[in-house]
Image (cartoon, rainbow, N blue to C red; front, side, top):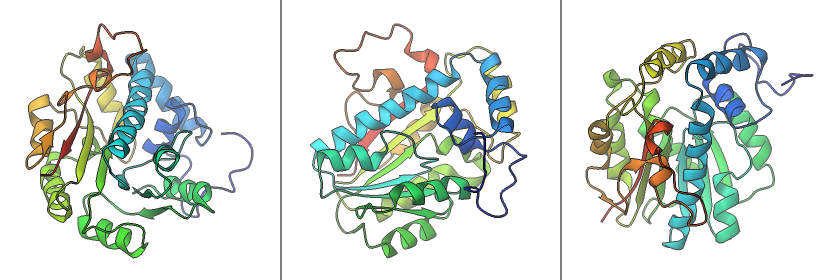
Length: 269
């Protein structure tokens, strides 16, 4: 991003790359700095499909939100939402169901400030700054916005966020705590980076991610499947992102493993 940086909240170090701004860059957004672009380009040089992976993740999220609305979901808690880009969850959900409500959650103050600016005047959507690992705070602050009623079904979206939680912080326990707060009929969405089927340079790209405040932890399909304990996976199950309910008009992806990420949606019965 060039020009004025008046949009940056006080106390944000613009000289250190931000995972949210790097993600924004890969999605074609404008809210990033030279330091973010430099790191993104280093990662892309080692894993040329990284941008496509991130874009595929966003396309999956949109497909899944449409699926959830079609199946009666009207409440969405999007944790780790990042800096909003075109086709945000609230845009997709509200276009299909004007009575839908969305709460975005992110730990990055830059992402949160941008969300607040974009959501100004949108009555059915809000944003809070919180860490996915602090489930009590996430649920408490989301509830205080007055948009979500956790006694009714809600879709909890964890798109590309759990791979930022180290094993030492027990991400499965975090998901279990969220599950306990979800009413029957709720849904859990997860997409997660993996080394399954990936070349060795992916590991080096993972090391570069450690230069941001949130290092990526690659996990196997079996490790990711644990997050869906207590949920019934909807078809086609936990699969590489391009295989999750692709648009019939899109050409078949002959190498879906190249995106380096799994995706799934589960229903709490």
